[in-house]
Length: 303
Ligand code: ATP
Image 1 (cartoon, protein in one colour):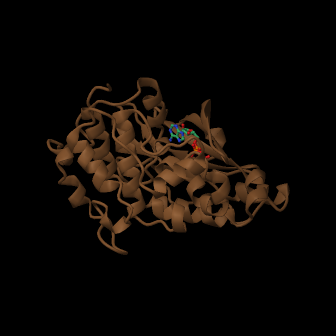
Image 2 (cartoon, rainbow, N blue to C red; image 1 turned 120 degrees about the vertical axis):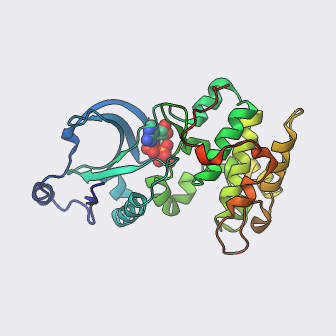
Image 3 (tube, rainbow, N blue to C red; image 1 turned 135 degrees about the vertical axis):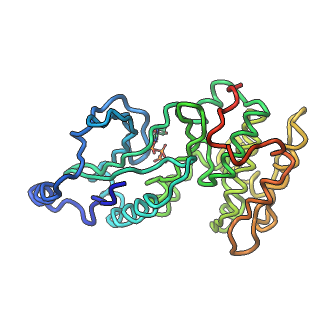
């Protein structure tokens, strides 16, 4: 992977200055090296485009951030993005969306990412309602293996319908500064400790995992009120019920994840320590999962 990062460490002072800089980076990719296709989606700070790298014919998703728009929001943003990008370039996992290159021009920052051909898990769930137990087990196993930011909007599906987690999020980086603005829409997966004291830990992902499993199987949110406030009240009180017929093993796993105290959640390694994925993997819900071949075996048919 080309290691060079071309993310700005300052905002455009003048167009002339940034032109000089981009010209001096010999051999660096630019948006002109791609055939840009359709827009795949919009984020609060970005647009994601399908694009083909002309010299290889390989398809990517390119996330485009508008510098001026970002600059209005937060002057220190570029440094944070650069750091996040660096961290992300070093992390490779078949279940994570890879970041290949970053570059910029006068107006935009570009992040070249793995293309998740089949889009969002959230859309799949809206389309077919809920997932079979077999599919739910498959995606839960992939999530446990690649644990990241576990909201269904971040769970993308590749050409083969394997999971690709979009944990590289400029949104995530920027999130801290725009908490209030960005909170909308994610209340359903937010852990009680975030609601009560705005403290999150690795264990908050375990809570989200419980929420996602509940949703895949039942086709509805574990916690959902008429307003965001009421949803958060329910989260705080761990106030949810299972619909009739919810699989018993899945129910037991959800109950062990949706626990108010973060360190008591299945998979928590205790206060301040890393998650203990082995505890999760050994749960009966995962009986029959072939962990060694999780990313190479074909996925179960979507149903
Ligand atoms: P926000 O920035 O507001 O949190 P977001 O994370 O959805 O929103 P983006 O990362 O810009 O914002 O993504 C916008 C949309 O583009 C996503 O909702 C997703 O549907 C689609 N998308 C993002 N990354 C990819 C990808 N690598 N492959 C395919 N589609 C993608």
